[in-house]
Length: 289
Image (cartoon, rainbow, N blue to C red; front, side):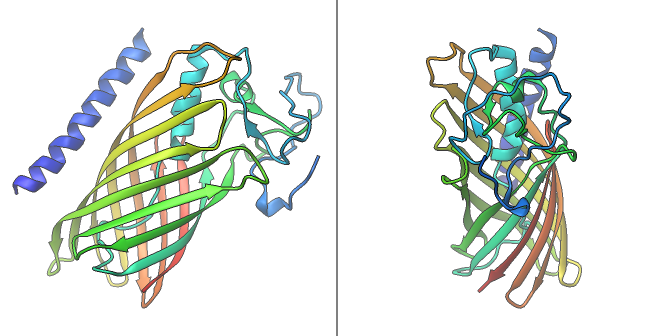
């Protein structure tokens, strides 16, 4: 019980800090096949907004800060890209078991992005003047490679990475640690605490690191385990280019999570929705052995 109280208290503290900070802030021509694209050239040619062009330095849109980027837009960018960076493990609260290993491919779909807003337009460059960040759907989609290893019946660790240097200049990676505080095998109910770290890879213009704490609860029903979670995160974003002179941004956020996991022999399938400044929808298929 002491362990559970400690877990709940630590998460509530992070969430409390997050809500307080957010409240204060509120008041005060290379082409890839379509299925592999991270971005698209799809906006109406009558659009007046001028894109920042990198003259095909990369086949896809890249993170490069423009000198016109303001402090408030820098913060907005951090609040929305938080959802990209946040480690979405798509696992039920039930840990995978001692010395078991899981490898999976996840497909991530973002909520709608308004890439005409300055916090998106002034943080990305494009291969040419018609190559927008998103298409008519206003969403981005990209894959992750995930892995997980069980250290005991109650503890497992995991990680994820996406980095395609031949396509663009950024990627994401993360690590997590999970402890299953409640393992009721009779009622098939589970409660797990997860600590996670995520980081932006390779980008020359900025650093972005996120530390998060998440509590999830689930109940197995046959081969399915639906679950819900609440997480609090603290992110630190730092620009490191002479093009702008911006202060570091500490970005606290709360996210709500719902999902399900399906296990049959070595097959593991899941889906998860993360609700935050920018919602994310993640689908996973993997093997566990």
